Image (tube, rainbow, N blue to C red; front, top):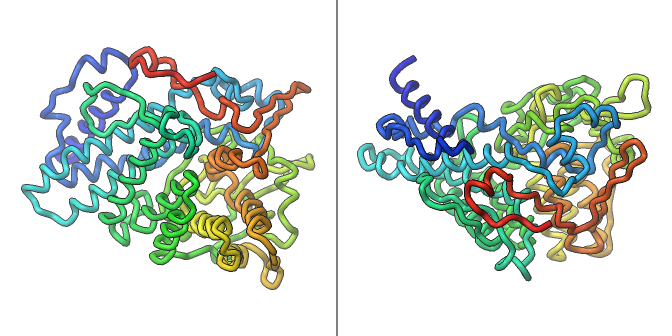
Length: 458
């Protein structure tokens, strides 16, 4: 191992130690000579840590209505899985919190050092590294906000409690909760800076480019309900990169195969930014069954019906097999892709009253998903009808992509799109009504004990 790799390893170890929840690690500071990166390559290597793109949120997949578990399988799971599956009000999701704040600490370490280091080298690479760090921080802030802060509501965002916005690597700065408004303002600020700095192309899809930056910005604006800006950001992303996989192409897709997408993971041409989820219930459990109403919503000519699902042997039930990472045995792809950007632009157009543009984007997507000559023709007469069609297709296209929970949260703000989630375990019925307090998880108990943060309401 050369000197550079040793230095990066020590930097990474210091970050993991500093982000650990154990109190002794907060008291015992590592030798700064070991924990301070010295070159731009050091900073890049910190963010290229292979663990980071495997840290898709666990619980955000567990809680959706895309699947269900047999009672015996549910019984065999660890407590966090069992509790989150039934929306237990006491769910303690320390792992997702700790992993995302570890990513944020890494990003802040880079941001705290990049200008100092670049004073010596004056390299254009510094801008790309800074853009990556801003993107990484905003991605994690947004993920955390979908679990530990209420859904954005313009009427209450200035007073609703948001997440902790750690903007520096100095862990001696006390942690305080922002408001939801401050949370989204910071995410958007980071991304607006990032898209100016990110390159148009990258060596690997585990690093973001400009198209990925605009895609995430569009996603954030959509969640916030700012449809004009969501559409504009989606436009910018698709101008830079708009490729969709043609599911009828035998060089890209074999729908009947156990791993239908032939170009896997970062080689998949639709992926803008690669993140994988390796631990959620539905992503790794082969006994997780697809909701029957969702499965039946796919037309017989829709290639996704074969490419996404396979029948469970001996049963009239189905399981998911269609992750873009190439294998259901290693989790699910939950990063950013062009299909989502088309859907964001379509939904935004519909909400803004531009039905023609909305249907044009939806048709562009569905023409790559149906057997040739069978693409459905939609002729909605109103924006509301167009929106209903698009939201239905969004649910079908984005299954197991880690977006359903955030979608339900924002759609629950309107009674016409709100849903009540239901689980049936051995005859016991569990329900989660729209806008229930359980849509916001508790701050993990160990974090509350260490920081005295204000806890979410129950």
